[in-house]
Length: 125
Image 1 (cartoon, one colour):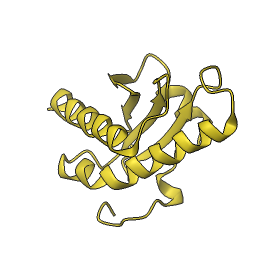
Image 2 (cartoon, helix red, strand yellow):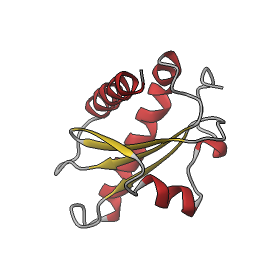
Image 3 (cartoon, helix red, strand yellow):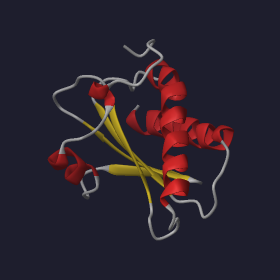
Image 4 (tube, helix red, strand yellow):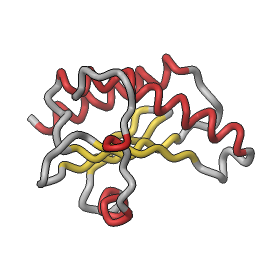
């Protein structure tokens, strides 16, 4: 699955109870600017699921929020191969929260996401 290049519906985190658990104290988080990544290992396994969010308080205009969300989804799509190389591609729920004050380019988001994955891999070993 991780060698596939697209984003699929099964990779999206849509379940409200899973989202609630992800933002509860049961999950862990990694913060590498401009992203804050909440993660939780699921017991039932399956492919990793993710969600993205951008604060309406920091970015008033929906155009800017949507652009940042598109960049975050693209960064996830490109870096999910790295996620599978670290053996983190099974049963992981992720929430990518944009914490930066300004829009940044895709390479900076990808770098932040990659460093977050490395930190998660070190913690889970």
